[in-house]
Image 1 (cartoon, rainbow, N blue to C red):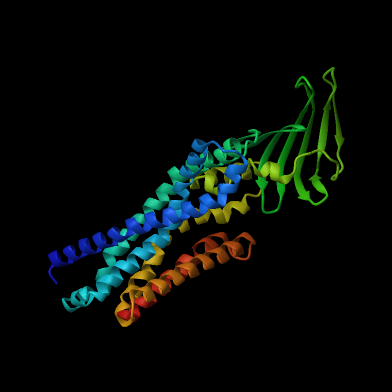
Image 2 (image 1 turned 180 degrees about the vertical axis):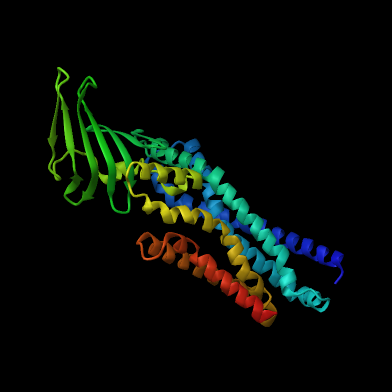
Length: 363
């Protein structure tokens, strides 16, 4: 096969795929926003949200939505574009001229790889900033909640009923606050005491503290320490109050999350609850490439089916199976059954093997 023919075919394939990808991506985005709008409409009306704040609410959510819909959009675009080309017998003509399915797949896989790398960069730069803005608009401008928390790389500061809280980590899965320090103040904001607790566990009966000690400060500056019972009421807030200022992994980039874990480890706090999320930040952006490994050989079989819709349906079913497998491996990783790195990459590895098997059986 002449190199110029291969180059022309590659450009044609990429152009056809992109021509379908853009409208598919826009369609998925519009459908997502419509569903999300009607889902949030009751909240917006109930809180009498400012229209500009509501618009910004959805605007700052778009980057995360794009990240979520990009893999199925790429999968659909490749299935449709290759399916149409196959039904036109263009793929048959290419194979007759010496272009194998593997050679056909190379430019499309390169496109999917570029999209995956772009998604990774997008997730590291745009998404964390927009998610923080989205959470601020959601809690402060729409729900009209007072801004009680300040988040930094070293922990969380929260202004509550008992005073000012310094919290090293909030674990929403277990309902635990780690590294809690409460600065209790008087009416004139004079410091009355400092309470230190290794952890506080939220239960149906309220907070249960561990190793809690209160350092009382007398008016003359003298200090006195006393141990507190584990069920002594020292935190009037509920777990949901603290979750409002908890920063989810989606709001942190890979490097920010890794720095956060190192800071927790330096303080003697086990950061392993974030390990799966850390590896997921590298694995999930390559979903588009992984699904392409299955979509391309699957679309090559469209000529054996009665319609393109059958292949698209099968492809989307495989895409759904991927997300189910990813969620399952994620859950197993969070529970400690699987190592974090295996949990994050298992779905990618399995689907790459499935795609490789489809390529081998088709050639």
